[in-house]
Length: 292
Image 1: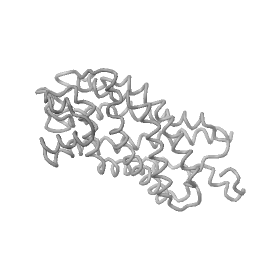
Image 2: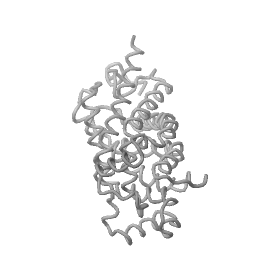
Image 3: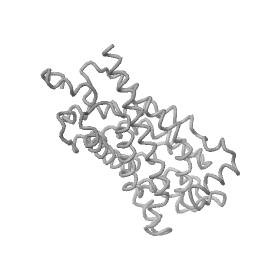
Image 4: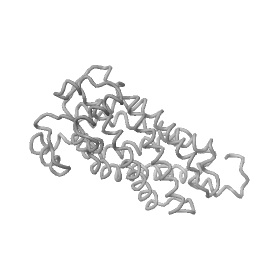
């Protein structure tokens, strides 16, 4: 994109990164977005994890999001809603730095910033590549987080036991989210300038869309990552996506694949809204700073 004629320079004002926008600035914007998102949304993510756990302990049975919040706060203290956040902060910064740097690089290489047309293939591919790269960094911290959220403890091998499953869930989630976000952003903001309302709204709607469609995979991932805390021997010995899916179907029917659907969508919407808004704000700041 750097060899475009001056007439196309307006594209570099925001959506298409300017040629002198450094990798360090891009990664800093991504790290800021990741830390902001996970810090603000952490208690809701904990509630989602607790609701999705299959075969929980007697004290872990909840009737819904509000009940889970009330029960956990009373039984474990309000501070327990932030249990495990340190591991997330440590992982979210570097992982999101890689996430957004990969996203911008792949989108640029595939021509996703060209013109005002929709580029769903570029958006989906950049999202898939971004999550493959970032999940390699984030998965161990995600496992630590979920162990602490459900009071579990396993060996080092558990850090990557669910990595293939994580990719099977996050690749379609991110591909769907990025495609929806790019399309919504172009529709709502054809001028392609920095618009906080557009970025926030597009991020929320894209997150809800992707979260709803990928909830079954998220339930499978949660079972594998928290199986060490289950009382059911069958769940404790579960290995792989197919086996985990079979257990869920056997014990809860097809409805089991949508455990936590509502809290997942409710938590994902503000989460992706915060993430995209933070990233776009930081990106806009660095671009303005270059112009000063």
